[in-house]
Amino acid sequence: MIPASFDYVRAGSAEEAVAALVEHGDEAKVLAGGHSLIPMMRLRLAVPEVLVDITEAGLAGITDAGDHLVIGAATTHHDVATDKVIETHCGVLAHVAATIGDPQVRHRGTIGGGLAHGDSAGDLPAVLLALEGTMVVQGPGGRRTVPASEFFVDYLETAVAADELLVEVHVPKLDDSWGWDYQKFTRVAQAWATVGALALVSSNGTISDARVGLTHMGSVPIRASATEAALAGQSTDAIADAAARAADDTDPPSDLNADADFRRHLATVLSRRALEAAVG
Amino acid sequence: MQVNVTVDGTAHSNEAEPRQLLVQHLRETLGLTGVNVGCDTSNCGACTVHLDGRSVKSCTVLAVQADGHEVTTIHGLATDETTEDGWHPLQTAFHEEHGLQCGYCTPGMIMAAADLLAENPDPSEEEIRDGLEGNLCRCTGYVNIVRAVQAAAAAGNGDGSSVSAHQAEEVSA
Image (cartoon, each protein chain N blue to C red):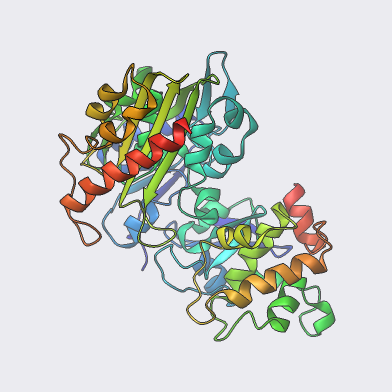
């Protein structure tokens, strides 16, 4: 299976990439690690006329910016998973990145690609939602910041316009009060999550802030807001009852791996396990 | 487009269509047919090679993306393919521990294992199984593959010396 023909542009900087996107508009797609895009192109599910390759545009790297970390969009999952600064200040992100795909996928796939692809079955959106991270998007008019809560618009659709490029991901530093866990259910080892639940909890016996991000429970990644509300100010004894509400107001897809009812069941069980591990 | 790539220590310069996959470039342009195409869908890992020292699935990388970079294939591991003394420790270990039956997954399995041992010279069984998560074998049931990687790690005295000189240079680069 070979992709349809396309023109290839290797961008040497974010500005060059944006210029190419402005020139080619909807006909162009951004290529980073390619581990979602190239398989789709091989199946002819995506047939872009131009690929703008940003792997050599100087967009990889991790910077400590005081109260938050700045992660370049072309930073690989492997580098996110093994970086000491991320491990120290935002361990939950390293933990989730280490569960993506398999080692070869993590050597090529990038944090920006995983987010800009906008697949609610991907692992990164849930953790960015729970972290309340922000995305920096560069377009012809300069840069703008988009909160994670506004980034995912619909299935495979994000707030990044056709002439824009996701250039940075910002995540807050977490202090020692935070615990976390990510639980995902897969049919086979390297498969996409049938459902995933990311718990991020700040507690000292009493829960001051509980955040639950859900993977593959709708057309976009979401937070389990009913569960979160039921935990604020409570003791950890409230987890089981709160997690039972994880699927409230969700509209999960049905497919060959799981129907919607099974997904709702998984969301409650995985949220309970993740919350218990996060405070344990 | 012109693709300049160093493969197994030899510099090559060839024309490639942008849509040509790295695995096709290695097999069809350079004749390195030890790099197998298995599933054709980025799952099975039979096409695994090293790109700048890290394992990648060459069916999911464009040949033009390897321009200016270094690739190591299964052909580049042995110091002398014609004699067992010249084999890479992983090749010897897969042979001695019966880490293959049909052999189709073996080149990718060995390349993934070589990267695993370069990063972690003394892995536990669990770490080996996690490290080979991206490589499917439909014959062995994996037991002898894990044994082979353990044997190669032991042969390297747990200090990474099981990694060939060429590969060690790449990893440190």
